[in-house]
Amino acid sequence: MQPCITGWGHTKFGALHDQSLEALICSAAREALDHAGVAAADVDGIWLGHFNSGMVPDAFAASLVLGTDDALRFTPATRCENACASGSAAIYAALEAVRSGSAKIALVVGVEKMTGLDTAGVTQALAGASYQKEEQGVSFPQIFGRIAGQYFQLFGDQSEALAHIAVKNHANALANPLAHLHKAVSFAFCNTVSEKNPMIAAPLRMTDCSLISDGAAALVIVAPELAAAFPRAVSFRAAVQVNDFLPMSRRDMTELTGPKVAFERAFDRAGVTLADIGFAEVHDCFTIAELMIYEAMGLKPKGRGAEALREGIVVKGGRLPVNLSGGLKAKGHPVGATGVSMHVMAARQLTRTAGAMQAENTDLGLVFNMGGSGVANYCSILEPAR
Image 1 (tube, rainbow, N blue to C red):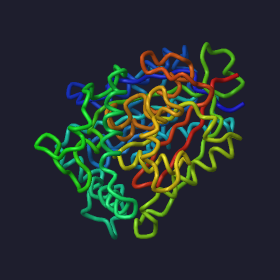
Image 2: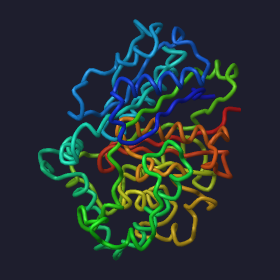
Image 3: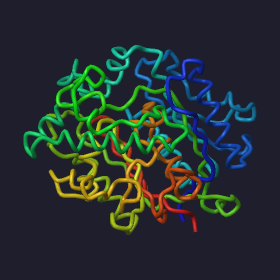
Image 4: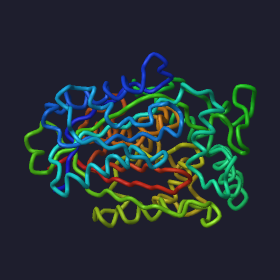
């Protein structure tokens, strides 16, 4: 048996101007400890996922978690950063500590406060997750615009497929009370360039881009021998990290090779196939990313990801519903919180406490969190603890 998630917390995502980074951290951490029924004094270690990159002045944030409860004082706390996968980096660091025996109970928090900067400032901060020697001055919308452009050139215009992904994820977010954006959008709106849906980085429109959000999420992870004492527990069947080359010039950008390897290794380690997975939360930082993730996970061959949409496979009620939470596209993307949020959403599905978001098949769930343009890749396969 593997380490288990036994409690979780999650703030609402959005433009939370009245909440500081510290307040978000403490809110999510307090909820996770209370949900697990764990006393702060029993926590052996704290891991904080936080990208920052100049978005807030709090560059030394790990010990802010101690403000949750005075009993956390003197508990070792470490900040983890791996671009948009910083939250998963914190989870995986905690897993290693639990597996090694150096911690029995771990507290993981992911957080980001992004809306203190304007859009240009956030765009500049996020660009720090690219290869500066070759890609300096290129924004992430432009990076994924280039990826989409190359994909379209090879496989034809996929604008309609991207619009369908946006519509799907906005519709899913309506069932998630914690989502940043509760607004249904039509296919016609998403598939048309207009004043309200401008071209951001051709061929990507505004509706193809994830949100600039504030928020935090947290998990309590315990050693397997402790899990039976908790009323709910979700086990890691597999947890795989794969890093690829940082320069885009060294990768084939018509596919997500690093994510593909991460999926393959996770399925192998878990002893399952994609057909065994009941639902997935994946990294739709841009709609083109979700489309290409369908192919990276093996749902469809390269260049044919749109078939998963046309066949209804990835929608709610389909064979493999993707991003029932609304995804980064509509739930929101507070960078350091995203990986932790994905695992919280999966844990709620697996314990059948997801409310209106609930999937039908919850034997196995998949989480895929990605840092950069397919560079830092984390793939978790989760199951209810037996």
